[in-house]
Length: 456
Image (tube, rainbow, N blue to C red; front, side, top):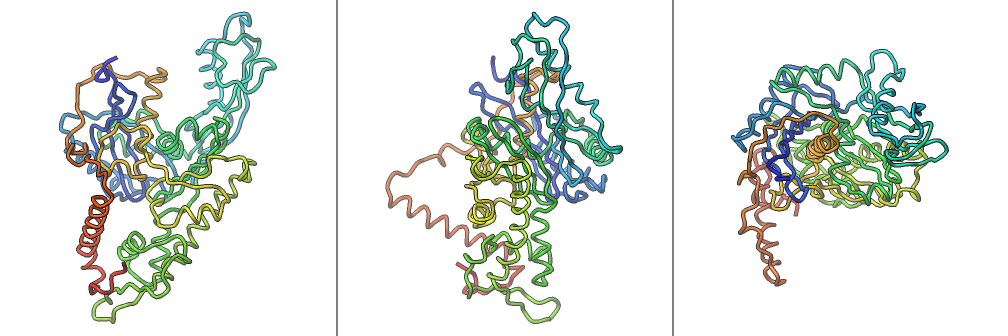
């Protein structure tokens, strides 16, 4: 099939700190080509929940405008939307059906019926089922079947992981999307979207915990033996760390965020004891000296709390360090904190790594798209393709031949590989100089530091 005949799918990540809209299509090699990309600062969302619909609509429209600017050929009407927040809960159920014609092979429509039956599961008033995920199937006395289609038997059943959310919170997301001129193709739990973007089949088999550290929440998904075992939403994220810094050090929120990004570390032991950041005083007050070690201690305290939740949830489902050979994969914007891998390994006793959404991306895209903060958005596109390939949903057949815009593609000249050590060293030093020049220009207004006060 010509890849231009496959649909363009758009992921919309409505986060606490940012809203991202990414349009993608799979190429002939099964890799995602990004055809449009837009982001905007988020307002109206707290801890993953839409609280102010009007502000959220403006932010969605700003992200869409940027997406259209990146590729004017795009037409966006339907989106896959991520959902998270304190209100998300999950439960395990088991269900089965007795077949009318047990001598015939099991058909896919019977599995669909089995899954749909679980949507009638009793849940608390005010909640709504977001997703029903089969874990493993059984046919008569045969257990642990991945796909029962083609088996024979009297009775077919499965264990299910059911994800629910607050009806009002779901309604607010749908309302914000609708009033932005879009329709929601499906709501997808954010940790599941992030997981699909940053892990492969090997990770699922080995057993892995994926922690997506967002602005308002940290989302957890645990996989073992190829099965989704557990999901959880931890009610803390990057915004909480910023607020801790603001209150603990008595600085403005914008200064706290800048210090976290530029100087922050998740391990206080790794921070320099004699390093200080100078911050101008407010309206004639004296300048403030902030200890980098104090900054790291505040960050470590909150990050340790988030990781303690991860350890707690892993114990709840009986998956300790011996079971999860794949360890912890950290993704989301908060995963970019320095020394977070070391703190994660120390707290959980598991190996850790940063999960980047490169696994499924076509080569030659700009580095911006490969950042962990876009894992959810790229995962939403992959969920759309899963629906398309399994015919779970209807997709329009009016496909346009749209190419990846130049702004999202790495120019050919940049792809030159330096083979000599000398060339690599020169390039690295140039990059370092560029970084510090840019950093000084960006923060000079905020910190008013002399050159010799900048930490190197």
